[in-house]
Length: 166
Length: 166
Figure (spheres, chains in turn blue, cyan):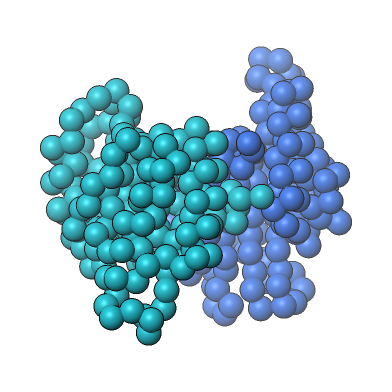
């Protein structure tokens, strides 16, 4: 069984000063357009996720829905530990319950620094804040076939949007 | 002063059984064609290196020359520590002598596992073998403005060729 995790950061969102709460900040018009382009490109690259888990915050949820609109996944579910400061252990517990199959592809849509921190925990067991993940950027992590993924995973992809758009 | 390092692995090369020595293994026809496509794409992405240092082995040298042919750099120099099992400290010494300027962009063309090992040393001070670098793939590392880059650098890019070609 192979399991690949794609950490995808939400697109460009409205400033904190423009919204009553951080959770409600939507993508800007440019953020929306750029996220559509990225989603289209990810589809062209042949990516397909069995499921997208997303932070419940508006800007992440919108990003996840755009990925779904471009046929990257049949299914989007809100997952509260993907909100800022969420606990990776809750996701690791969830992962145990995810039905095994030959090749599993999962996208996680959320925020910085949490996404890169989670990726760092998977690849070397602790956070070091050395991975630069831009808005609408992607980190691709391959989990080990057996055993805990913490400190036992490998990274095959890290990209800002500008290196996949033309 | 910002300094970005691009680790670029040589393209697909002839098998060991087809050449008198490992050092002489050339790119295959497919390897050559694919490396040209990658070089063209890197150019389209707006990349430009002030200098390309390459392993003296034929397959790396050919890769570096292809990058140069696509106007990615005015200059290619052979650098023996980029050969397999080369010592990163020799490169760090070289780096001290590289003339400072506002934005320095340097490409290093070489081999696995050495390139990913060097990148890992820069970002977290030791090798962990958790970065997957495919043939003709790229790792982008941003060095700190001051101090030793060892354990103090950040990664902004890691890609296999398939995610930058269409």
